[in-house]
Image (cartoon, rainbow, N blue to C red; front, side, top):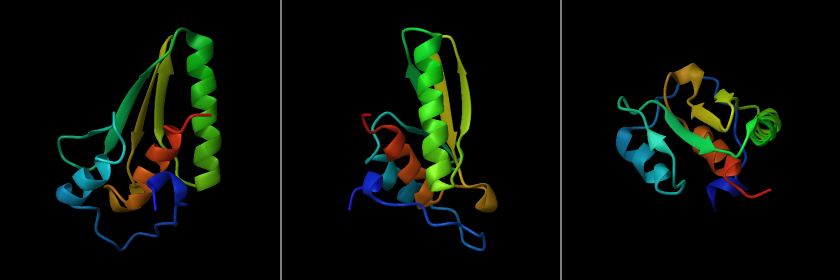
Amino acid sequence: MSLAAKTCVPCKGGVDPLSRADAERYLSEIPGWQLSEDGRRIQREYKFKNFVQALAFVNKVGGLAEQEAHHPEIRFGWGHAQIELWTHKINGLHENDFIVAAKIDQPD
């Protein structure tokens, strides 16, 4: 099953974050995303023609985050948006982070 077809399962903590090897395997399914140096976060930069398009994208991501109950760090401004994902309760990566990333990249 593709990551985008899955639904996030609440992480209540008490589990280990994904290993770097597992994170890199998931990363291969979401082109354009990068793994942080410490292997605990993923991020991607998006470019847009103007502020309005960037804002519309951020609003789309916000709605998706609410649906999945898994919320990214979002930074944006004129013509760009940066999304960063990790699971706070385990201070690292969980499958949920990759599910949300895959859903963000789906066309509208």
